[in-house]
Image (cartoon, rainbow, N blue to C red; front, side):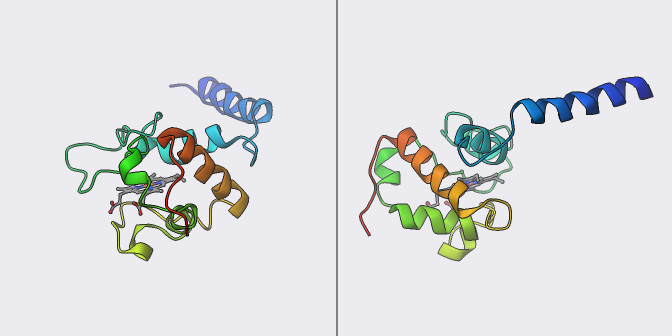
Length: 122
Ligand code: HEC
């Protein structure tokens, strides 16, 4: 790989992010960027990070029976504070330092569209 290529590649990344900035209104992009690597693009828990050595299966967001056990507040908590905050696996990282509350609210709504469920009322 020569230097020109690297410069071109970096310029490509920068111009891409100008064309498509990640903003709170763009939940699918946030999901794709931060969550899909484990949970899968379609939310089935089959992202590229999940190899046979992965100790726990990331939640399948299309499984309405499982997702109905969680209220919106439960989801928000686990997304902000990570798996261990709700006695789940540390393989689910905390996002409170990376994402704003607004972005997390958007993700919760996005997950509800994937499970087509309303969740537990809390
Ligand atoms: C490094 C892999 C990884 C990434 C990245 C990841 N998760 Fe997870 N997630 C997991 C695993 C593993 C579990 C299952 C934990 C368990 O059942 O103990 C999980 C569980 C969950 C749950 C269900 C928790 C529960 O109480 O059942 C939600 C909701 C969730 N993740 C949302 C997200 C969102 C939103 C993102 C992106 C901001 C994300 N996750 C990114 C691995 C990941």
